[in-house]
Amino acid sequence: MLFAGGRLFTEGELTVELVSAEGAREVPSGTPPLALRATGRLSPERADLIVLPGAAPGSGVSR
Image 1 (spheres, rainbow, N blue to C red):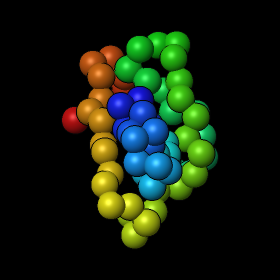
Image 2: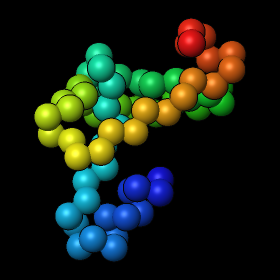
Image 3: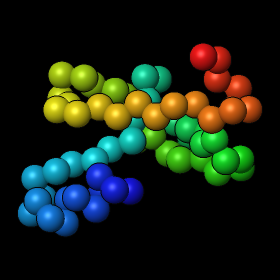
């Protein structure tokens, strides 16, 4: 949400998207039952900054 709020202060020059390597899908959060919707596939060539959050304990993601 912090980066999404930055769009307000950059006159629309900042775009924030939730994407996944698999494409558009529900992405489970570390706080069940909360899930977020990825709207597309990760395209590193389009990004200036990519944020990769860590997995939460018990999320089923291996380290």
